[in-house]
Structure formats: C-alpha cells, structure tokens
Amino acid sequence: GPAFDWQDPLNAKNLFTEDELAIAETAERYCQERLQPRVLQAYRDEHYDPKILEEMGELGLLGSGIKGYGCAGVSSVAGGLITRAVERVDSGYRSGMSVQSSLVMGGIYEFGSEEQKEKFLPEMARGRLIGAFGLTEPNHGSDPGSMESIAKPHPTKKGYFSLSGAKTWITNSPIADVLLVWAKLQETGKIRGFLVERKDCPPGTLETPAIKDKNGLRASITGMIQMDGVPVPEANMFPEVEGLKGPFSCLNSARYGISLGVMGALEDAIARARTYSLERKQFKGNPLAKYQLIQKKLADAATDAAYGTLAAVQVGRLKDEGKVTPEMISMVKRQNCDAALRNARVLQEIFGGNAVSDEYHIGRHVANLFVTQTYEGQSDIHSLILGRAITGIQAFV
Ligand code: TGC
Ligand code: FAD
Image 1 (cartoon, rainbow, N blue to C red):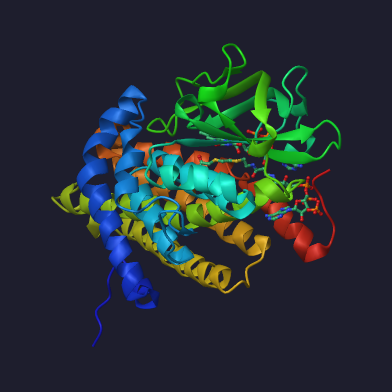
Image 2: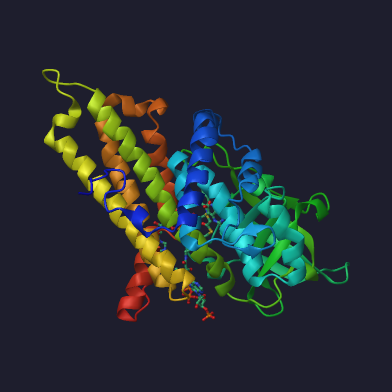
C-alpha cells in the first residue's frame, strides 16, 4: 500500500499537474544548487545580489503567471511552488522575487497601458530591470488609504506630474530601476499608480537610501523612496485604476505567493530539526528524536505544513477559475504565516544552544518569518478583514 511521506504528509503532490511538478523541480534545483550555498554569507553581510533576479529570469521564474510579454503564463499553483522553492532557502530571496513578479509586473500587467506593458514586462521578466512597490509610508502602514504622497501637475514640464512624499520599508528600492509608486492625485484626492523610472529622475528629486542593520530578512535589500518633485510623464501613470483597489489587487497575488512560500521555510525548518534530533544524543545515548516531547513538536509542525499547503493549493485553483475572494487570500496568508512562525519558534528549541549559531539556519528562518507575518498586511489586520466579512462590521477604525 501507499507509504507515509513525512515531507508531504497529505500527498499534496497528487494535486499538481505534470507541468506544475516540472516547474517545481526546476525551481527547487536552482534554489538548492545556486541560492542555498550563498545565503549564509549574504545574510551575514546584509547583501542582496541583483544577479539573482537575472538568474531567475533565465529560468522563466519571474512574472510566471503572466501570459505573453516573455513570461511563462503558468498556473497560480505553479507560481506558488516557485515561491515555496525560493523561500525554502530564504524568505528574503522570495521577497525580492515577489516584489518583482507579483507586485510590480503583476500590477503593470493588470492595470498598465499596452505601451507600459511592452516597455517594461519583457525586460523585467529577464530580471534586467528591477522593480520596487511603494505603498507604505513612514506614518501610514496598515492604513495606506491615509497616505500623504501627492502627484500635482508639474510646474514647468508640460505633460508631466510632479511627485512628492516618502515611502519606507520598501523591498528592492535601493537597487530598483522602476518604482511603482502609489500617490494621491491632487486634483481628485484619489490614489493612482505611477511608474517612476530612476534613469529619468533629475538629481536631487529621488533618493532611495537603504535601511541597514535589520534583524530579519537580511538577505533582501530594503529601503526608502524619498520624492521631492519627481517629474513623471503622464504616460507613466496607470490609465484607469484609482483608489486602493489598484495596490490591493497587486497584493492579492503577492499574498497568495507568500501563503505557499512560507510553507517552504517551515518545511526546511522541519527537515533540519528532524535531522538534528536524530543525530544529537542526550541521556544514556538516546537521540533527541526518541523523546516524546520532541516528536510532538515535529508532529505539530508537519501537520500545520501539510494543512497549510492543501489550503493554499485550493485557493490557487479557485483563483485560476475566477472564484477567489480577497478574504480567502487573507485567510491563507494569515494562517500560513502564523503557523510557520509559531512552529519555527518551537522547532528552534530542538537545537538547544546551537540554535544560536547561524550555521544551523533555524534562527534565520524564525527572524524572517516574523517579517512575513508583518508585511503585506500584518496578521491582526487580516483577522479584521475576516472579522468584517463574518460579522458585516468593520473594526479597523
Ligand atoms: P477598504 O474600504 O477595505 O477598501 C478600499 C477599496 O479597496 C478595495 N479593496 C480591494 N480590492 C481588491 N483586492 C483587495 N484585497 C482589496 N481590499 C480592498 C475595496 O473594494 C475598496 O474599493 P472601492 O472601489 O470600494 O473604493 O479599505 P480600508 O481603508 O478600510 O482598508 C483597510 C485594510 C486594513 C483592509 C487595508 O488597508 C489593508 O489590507 N492594510 C494592510 C496594508 C498592507 O497590506 N500593506 C502592504 C504593503 S506592500 C508590502 O508589504 C510588500 S512586502 C513584499 C515583499 O517584500 O515580499
Ligand atoms: P503599523 O500599521 O503601525 O502596525 C503596528 C501594529 O499595530 C501591527 O501589529 C498591526 O497589526 C497593529 N494595528 C494597526 N492598526 C490596527 C487596528 N486598527 N486594530 C488592531 N491592530 C492594529 N511595504 C511596501 O509598500 N512595499 C514593500 O516592498 C515592503 N517591503 C517590506 C519589507 C520589510 C522587510 C518590512 C519589515 C516591511 C515591508 N513593507 C513594505 C511594509 C509593510 O507592509 C508594513 O510594515 C506593514 O503593512 C505594517 O505597517 P506598519 O509597519 O506601519 O505597522
């Protein structure tokens, strides 16, 4: 009869198509062979190598859900299997990719003019143009609707807007060539999306300083976007979409990617804790794995990883059939990030003092998973989104 596989307890593989399995294998091989060997040093040095995006581009891993424009056009589940493979190595590497693929390329694909799509998507798919997504501001994180960044008609350049304001905690901003910035149009007070091209910004109008000395997500680069009268041609504004619907539609895809991504980090934590518990002996030469309390930690984590994966696959299928709602995505984003963080923290205990050495990788996952629970809607914000849908009463304000 069938054998139980602790690495895929509920046989999620059974739900994947041949194409999805092939994409997952390509992504896993690249990540284990090319990313895993460099992550420790990158994390220590707080360094992100932009070449990684080019490497991913060569393998067709960027903007994978987009049809045409040099992109693979694969299913949401396949995209999730890519994020899972990358995040098995490091959430920061997945972050750099999510911003490029889901937030910026996804935004341009959904809301950009044909001209914008042709101009940006093929180069971004190759990883030769790097994107950043600027929504969060120093004074407005969970509540981006109150943003202060503003776009006015440019005082001297006809056919241009002038953008001013500040964004913070922006993944990729210090290395980005194209920054998708959300700002209020002065004329209407409505939020619009602007594609800011670094190469076209006059000196002193755009600064993107890095935020250094992070204690999580150190293998990813994060910074600010400071705008002081940045001239942006009207042709670089998303033509139709206005209001929070624009940024949040991009977030739906990125949040979905995270829900399968964090399962990769959790699975890596499980595999490492299992190996460690089989090798480490305490009390009369017994491996830690022999002890019931250790076994329960592994059982809890494997169960949450298996449930989380199945739920995310279901939501991915609904997404591709046009049957998904944002609340479903909030549910898997919140649940999977919380479960990954909670279990990784418990598994960390198995390593004893060695957990404190970065060479065991577990501390890095724990620090990273705190960030995944925080960005793209902190878990309590997703609780409120779900609570609103359940009761009909909004509790944000
Ligand atoms: P609310 O009244 O709920 O909605 C305003 C308008 O937006 C629409 N909308 C959505 N549309 C599509 N998809 C969604 N998920 C949507 N959510 C809302 C909504 O229909 C409405 O449209 P309309 O036409 O009626 O105007 O807005 P609110 O101001 O009450 O929002 C509250 C709340 C809490 C739901 C929202 O602001 C929220 O989710 N806050 C969390 C902020 C967040 O997620 N920030 C993410 C920043 S980007 C990031 O973190 C990237 S990290 C990437 C990485 O490195 O991997
Ligand atoms: P706050 O909004 O100040 O929230 C602080 C705490 O209060 C949270 O626990 C929150 O849940 C809680 N809270 C807030 N309001 C309520 C309420 N009404 N009821 C109950 N509790 C509440 N943003 C981007 O735009 N682009 C990016 O690329 C990006 N990358 C990031 C990378 C990193 C490494 C990090 C750390 C963040 C990144 N972010 C990015 C920002 C991220 O989305 C925000 O940090 C997040 O949305 C939370 O906002 P905040 O930090 O301002 O926290």
